Length: 211
Image (cartoon, rainbow, N blue to C red; front, side, top):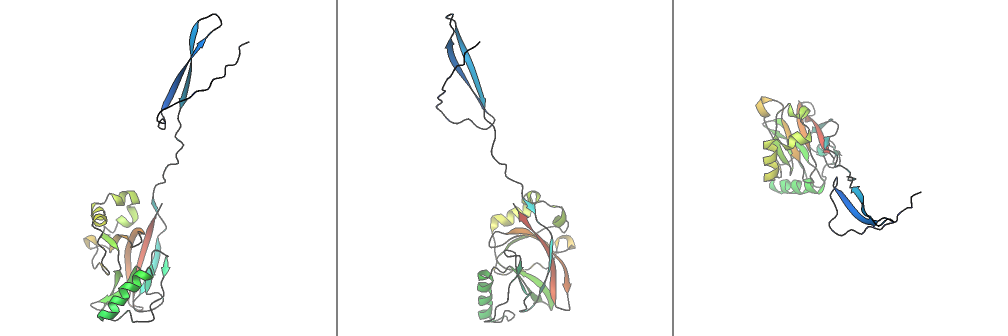
């Protein structure tokens, strides 16, 4: 019958990286005087939780009306409409009210609203980094592939965030489609899918990047 051997191994040095191994040679002297080594090997497992890949959430469709209605301002941050301001008229073009509107949009996390251009309602985006992308990109790009888009990479690097901006034409005469990042770093893709002349307003669909 063999006797159990108890040993304490003290190790000094940098901790091994995941998937690396360490081997320890422990000298032993047998009863007959011969010397041997007990080899003890340890492999370090990778126990770190992998970072999940980013993905786009569900496609959401909304209609944003022109004016000061309850559906005239929209926030990606909250995922809902923002009640319009009551202490000034957001539809006027006076310099004083325009300054108030810009501040109000920031304070209330409002990212989108609609204004008129040559009589037609157009979507206005506030304090957002945007890049015009191809219409088909809305359905085919993953966040990883979007990050490789040179136009979008350039826009993110420039970080241009006008108080108000509009896109009047899509890439290649397709539907107006943009990648965007809000003032609060909410990112996604947006596409204009129509104009409602009766309301009047703009119909959009969008999806947000999730992690």
